[in-house]
Length: 220
Image (cartoon, rainbow, N blue to C red; front, side):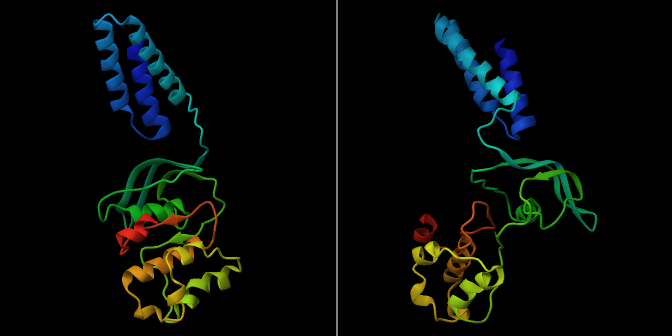
Protein backbone atom coordinates (compact mmCIF):
# COMPACT_ATOMS: atom_id res chain seq x y z
CA UNK A 1 0.00 0.00 0.00
CA UNK A 2 2.81 2.39 0.91
CA UNK A 3 4.71 1.53 -2.25
CA UNK A 4 1.59 2.07 -4.32
CA UNK A 5 0.99 5.45 -2.69
CA UNK A 6 4.54 6.57 -3.42
CA UNK A 7 4.37 5.42 -7.04
CA UNK A 8 1.05 7.14 -7.69
CA UNK A 9 2.26 10.34 -5.99
CA UNK A 10 5.41 10.57 -8.09
CA UNK A 11 3.63 9.73 -11.33
CA UNK A 12 0.87 12.21 -10.58
CA UNK A 13 3.37 14.97 -9.84
CA UNK A 14 5.11 14.43 -13.16
CA UNK A 15 2.04 13.84 -15.31
CA UNK A 16 -0.43 16.29 -13.81
CA UNK A 17 1.39 18.98 -11.87
CA UNK A 18 4.37 19.07 -14.20
CA UNK A 19 6.89 18.76 -11.40
CA UNK A 20 8.57 16.19 -9.19
CA UNK A 21 7.98 15.20 -5.57
CA UNK A 22 10.10 12.05 -5.56
CA UNK A 23 12.33 13.51 -2.80
CA UNK A 24 9.28 13.99 -0.58
CA UNK A 25 7.91 10.49 -1.06
CA UNK A 26 11.38 8.95 -0.71
CA UNK A 27 11.93 10.66 2.63
CA UNK A 28 8.47 9.71 3.88
CA UNK A 29 8.96 6.08 2.82
CA UNK A 30 12.26 5.97 4.72
CA UNK A 31 10.61 7.50 7.80
CA UNK A 32 7.79 4.93 7.68
CA UNK A 33 10.27 2.05 7.47
CA UNK A 34 12.33 3.51 10.34
CA UNK A 35 9.39 4.09 12.66
CA UNK A 36 7.96 0.65 11.89
CA UNK A 37 11.32 -1.00 12.62
CA UNK A 38 11.45 0.84 15.96
CA UNK A 39 8.02 -0.53 16.84
CA UNK A 40 6.21 2.78 16.44
CA UNK A 41 3.39 1.26 14.42
CA UNK A 42 0.98 4.12 15.00
CA UNK A 43 3.45 6.70 13.68
CA UNK A 44 4.23 4.48 10.70
CA UNK A 45 0.56 4.05 9.88
CA UNK A 46 -0.05 7.80 10.24
CA UNK A 47 2.80 8.64 7.86
CA UNK A 48 1.52 6.01 5.46
CA UNK A 49 -1.94 7.58 5.52
CA UNK A 50 -0.41 11.00 4.78
CA UNK A 51 1.50 9.53 1.85
CA UNK A 52 -1.68 7.96 0.43
CA UNK A 53 -3.51 11.26 0.93
CA UNK A 54 -0.81 13.06 -1.06
CA UNK A 55 -1.10 10.50 -3.85
CA UNK A 56 -4.87 10.96 -4.04
CA UNK A 57 -4.63 14.74 -4.18
CA UNK A 58 -2.06 14.69 -6.96
CA UNK A 59 -3.41 11.76 -8.98
CA UNK A 60 -6.90 13.26 -9.16
CA UNK A 61 -5.55 16.70 -9.94
CA UNK A 62 -7.09 18.41 -6.91
CA UNK A 63 -5.62 21.89 -6.87
CA UNK A 64 -6.39 25.04 -4.94
CA UNK A 65 -5.25 27.17 -7.88
CA UNK A 66 -6.88 27.23 -11.30
CA UNK A 67 -4.63 26.36 -14.23
CA UNK A 68 -4.26 29.51 -16.34
CA UNK A 69 -1.84 28.25 -19.02
CA UNK A 70 -1.22 24.61 -19.94
CA UNK A 71 1.68 23.43 -22.13
CA UNK A 72 2.25 19.82 -23.21
CA UNK A 73 5.14 18.60 -25.39
CA UNK A 74 5.69 22.09 -26.80
CA UNK A 75 8.35 22.64 -29.43
CA UNK A 76 9.39 25.89 -31.07
CA UNK A 77 11.65 25.97 -34.12
CA UNK A 78 13.38 28.79 -35.99
CA UNK A 79 14.68 27.78 -39.44
CA UNK A 80 14.31 24.15 -38.33
CA UNK A 81 16.54 24.83 -35.33
CA UNK A 82 14.91 23.78 -32.03
CA UNK A 83 14.72 26.66 -29.54
CA UNK A 84 12.27 24.95 -27.17
CA UNK A 85 11.85 21.19 -26.94
CA UNK A 86 9.38 19.00 -25.04
CA UNK A 87 8.16 21.76 -22.71
CA UNK A 88 5.54 20.60 -20.19
CA UNK A 89 4.34 23.32 -17.90
CA UNK A 90 1.32 24.56 -15.96
CA UNK A 91 1.00 28.21 -14.97
CA UNK A 92 -1.44 28.61 -12.10
CA UNK A 93 -3.72 31.58 -11.66
CA UNK A 94 -3.14 33.69 -8.57
CA UNK A 95 0.48 32.62 -8.11
CA UNK A 96 3.82 34.13 -9.08
CA UNK A 97 5.75 31.82 -11.41
CA UNK A 98 9.52 32.22 -11.85
CA UNK A 99 11.30 30.63 -14.82
CA UNK A 100 15.03 30.10 -14.36
CA UNK A 101 17.70 28.77 -16.68
CA UNK A 102 21.07 29.34 -18.31
CA UNK A 103 21.79 32.08 -20.83
CA UNK A 104 20.48 31.09 -24.23
CA UNK A 105 18.24 28.36 -22.85
CA UNK A 106 15.09 29.92 -24.35
CA UNK A 107 13.56 31.69 -21.33
CA UNK A 108 12.64 34.83 -23.28
CA UNK A 109 11.21 32.76 -26.12
CA UNK A 110 9.14 30.77 -23.64
CA UNK A 111 7.77 33.97 -22.08
CA UNK A 112 6.72 35.29 -25.50
CA UNK A 113 5.08 31.96 -26.24
CA UNK A 114 3.24 31.95 -22.91
CA UNK A 115 2.03 35.47 -23.67
CA UNK A 116 0.77 34.37 -27.11
CA UNK A 117 3.11 36.73 -28.97
CA UNK A 118 4.47 33.74 -30.88
CA UNK A 119 2.90 30.34 -31.56
CA UNK A 120 4.51 26.94 -30.88
CA UNK A 121 5.68 24.85 -33.81
CA UNK A 122 4.00 21.79 -32.31
CA UNK A 123 2.45 20.52 -29.10
CA UNK A 124 -0.61 21.39 -27.03
CA UNK A 125 -1.10 24.97 -25.84
CA UNK A 126 -4.09 26.21 -23.86
CA UNK A 127 -4.46 29.61 -22.20
CA UNK A 128 -7.23 31.38 -20.32
CA UNK A 129 -5.69 34.72 -21.26
CA UNK A 130 -7.81 36.15 -24.09
CA UNK A 131 -4.90 38.03 -25.67
CA UNK A 132 -1.31 39.09 -24.91
CA UNK A 133 -1.02 40.96 -21.62
CA UNK A 134 1.49 43.72 -20.72
CA UNK A 135 5.05 42.40 -20.85
CA UNK A 136 8.41 43.81 -19.83
CA UNK A 137 10.99 42.85 -22.46
CA UNK A 138 14.73 42.62 -21.92
CA UNK A 139 15.17 45.63 -24.22
CA UNK A 140 12.11 47.83 -23.73
CA UNK A 141 11.08 50.72 -25.94
CA UNK A 142 13.03 53.92 -25.25
CA UNK A 143 12.02 57.24 -26.77
CA UNK A 144 14.61 60.02 -26.80
CA UNK A 145 12.49 62.28 -24.69
CA UNK A 146 11.93 63.01 -21.00
CA UNK A 147 11.51 60.41 -18.26
CA UNK A 148 7.88 61.38 -17.66
CA UNK A 149 7.12 61.16 -21.40
CA UNK A 150 8.54 57.63 -21.58
CA UNK A 151 6.70 56.65 -18.41
CA UNK A 152 3.33 57.89 -19.63
CA UNK A 153 3.61 56.77 -23.26
CA UNK A 154 1.60 53.60 -22.62
CA UNK A 155 -1.15 55.70 -21.10
CA UNK A 156 -1.37 57.61 -24.36
CA UNK A 157 -1.42 54.42 -26.43
CA UNK A 158 -3.70 52.28 -24.26
CA UNK A 159 -5.85 55.12 -22.91
CA UNK A 160 -5.90 53.68 -19.42
CA UNK A 161 -5.66 55.16 -15.94
CA UNK A 162 -2.18 54.50 -14.59
CA UNK A 163 -1.11 53.48 -11.11
CA UNK A 164 1.89 55.54 -9.95
CA UNK A 165 2.79 53.34 -6.97
CA UNK A 166 6.06 51.98 -8.39
CA UNK A 167 7.05 55.30 -9.93
CA UNK A 168 6.85 56.76 -6.44
CA UNK A 169 8.45 53.72 -4.73
CA UNK A 170 11.50 54.05 -6.95
CA UNK A 171 11.60 57.78 -6.12
CA UNK A 172 11.52 58.79 -9.80
CA UNK A 173 9.58 62.03 -9.44
CA UNK A 174 12.79 64.05 -9.19
CA UNK A 175 13.93 62.57 -12.54
CA UNK A 176 10.71 63.40 -14.40
CA UNK A 177 12.14 66.15 -16.61
CA UNK A 178 15.49 64.55 -17.32
CA UNK A 179 16.25 62.98 -20.70
CA UNK A 180 16.23 59.19 -20.83
CA UNK A 181 19.71 59.04 -22.38
CA UNK A 182 21.12 60.84 -19.32
CA UNK A 183 20.07 58.05 -16.92
CA UNK A 184 22.06 55.08 -15.72
CA UNK A 185 20.98 51.59 -16.80
CA UNK A 186 19.57 50.95 -13.34
CA UNK A 187 17.49 54.16 -13.44
CA UNK A 188 16.17 53.25 -16.89
CA UNK A 189 15.15 49.81 -15.61
CA UNK A 190 13.20 51.45 -12.79
CA UNK A 191 11.31 53.50 -15.38
CA UNK A 192 10.55 50.37 -17.41
CA UNK A 193 9.32 48.45 -14.37
CA UNK A 194 7.21 51.40 -13.16
CA UNK A 195 5.74 51.76 -16.64
CA UNK A 196 4.67 48.14 -16.93
CA UNK A 197 3.39 48.03 -13.34
CA UNK A 198 1.28 51.13 -13.99
CA UNK A 199 -1.20 48.87 -15.80
CA UNK A 200 -2.27 47.65 -12.36
CA UNK A 201 -3.57 44.27 -13.51
CA UNK A 202 -3.33 40.75 -12.18
CA UNK A 203 -1.32 39.18 -15.04
CA UNK A 204 2.05 40.47 -16.22
CA UNK A 205 5.06 38.90 -17.93
CA UNK A 206 8.45 40.26 -16.83
CA UNK A 207 11.65 39.26 -18.62
CA UNK A 208 14.62 39.71 -16.25
CA UNK A 209 13.02 42.64 -14.40
CA UNK A 210 15.86 42.96 -11.88
CA UNK A 211 18.66 43.46 -14.42
CA UNK A 212 20.88 46.46 -13.57
CA UNK A 213 18.96 47.13 -10.32
CA UNK A 214 20.83 47.72 -7.08
CA UNK A 215 20.18 45.51 -4.07
CA UNK A 216 17.95 48.04 -2.32
CA UNK A 217 15.72 48.39 -5.40
CA UNK A 218 15.48 44.61 -5.81
CA UNK A 219 14.12 44.32 -2.27
CA UNK A 220 11.20 46.58 -3.17
